[in-house]
Length: 448
Length: 152
Ligand SMILES: Cc1ncc(COP(=O)(O)O)c(C=O)c1O
Image (cartoon, rainbow over all chains, first blue to last red; front, side, top):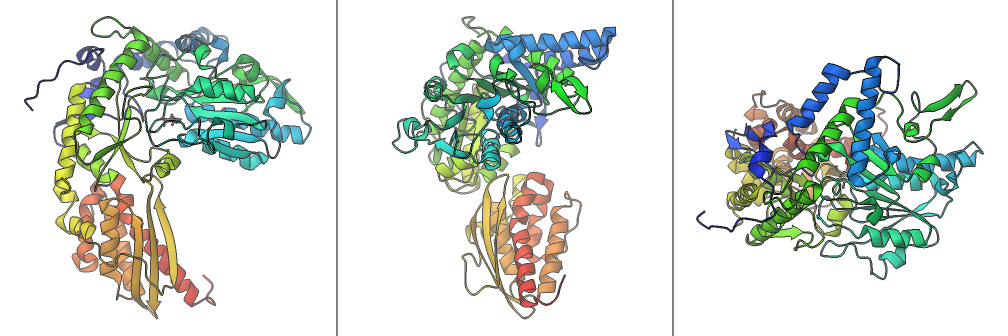
């Protein structure tokens, strides 16, 4: 308790940030300070996001893209402005951004393009120009990685089951990095002429590993495959530049980046979006409807069936504004670069602090090189559920289990881990509380 | 509610010294149950002699609550009649799903009353029930196998 640590550099002004998040000042479980370390699952929301949603409902609410009255105009403008704000964050064209309910739906939108195009082609039904890229034949291959969240794995398994395509995967080494040079499950071994899709995460939600998307994308493009990137854990936490990344699709969720739940984003190259058949169908996504059949609107409307989640889009726009207005305490960095630096400093401190606890083993890279802020660990002799229970009793809220990455846990020979994730409102005190609570769990269960 | 009332001594004792653990032969039915939210797994076998439960053997991995609960299940139900075993299971289920509002009957539940605190943590109820649901599944398979001519 008496150790004096040098201040961490690169941090945000956490006191000021925390003031924007009322939930962080509540107490939990018998008066404990809330130590929220589960932003990887979902983040908390600043007042500006809640205010933006409230403002939308109190002043502008109407069905977007329907009707010609004033409120409908204002609501549509607010929705489309949010699209532009979010597109600018990742350097995308506004028309390339599709709103979905979350990243899971965004990834399914892409995967269903393949199974839908394949089914329509089999029956000789109409497809948009260029849709051949989405038609799979038995024996075609879809490549994923062993570190995927179920949201970027199960949809591809489904496509394989529906089309006869074969799922292959890139392995993970013992440090938690993609094993790209492995003779059997590396890039060269897994990618080939029949590879049609390579789907991978940009940052593991378990290991924190940032993957070399560019290298994988170049290899995928060399064999003519499309590259789908799960950016759920990257877009909220670091600057993401589409140009540099080289992906064809990118999916992320609003609720993990200070935005509301119920809104996610799919970015796709416009030429690809144009050649995809629709996913969900109904109102708002059509061009002409006759009893005999229908034609469809151009993207992004083609993929936004029904009255959309306008208030959530507006809230996510406000979240992006909030993130971009952040500055590091020493004023050297702004926006997502400041967010990344903040988390980098916290991650380094957390890895150092946990390394000092005997019986605690971090699953994932032990250094901060190409590594984000998910820190998952096992405590020898205590199941993650029990670790989490003791932590919760002290107000430390972490995630326990397989974090929707069951194959990855199997790869590391563990059933479950305890995961702490950091965001803009966390500081060193949160990590000190985490470590103290882990030590308490060890003494409670008599393993240290 | 505090940690000590969740992790009663009896639970920690069963966790550290599980009774009847390990898979044994012979058995009339075997099931494999998982808790998909945390990946905990349990393989459980039931052996009957007429209406008497002569053995429940099990193996698996999981948290203290799920493992202790399987151990208590073994201790409570082996030697009982199937109908008594199922009645105890129903009482345990009611306790677990009672959100802390159900007063447990120690005569029926025995050591299983120690799990009363779990009911106040909805996320852990599934852990406590893992072994019991597996047993319920296995025993109904075992009974069905013994009287195949009786259609349900
Ligand atoms: C890496 C990753 N991919 C996909 C998802 C799915 O996101 P959502 O549940 O918001 O659709 C998550 C979060 O749960 C995630 O962390």
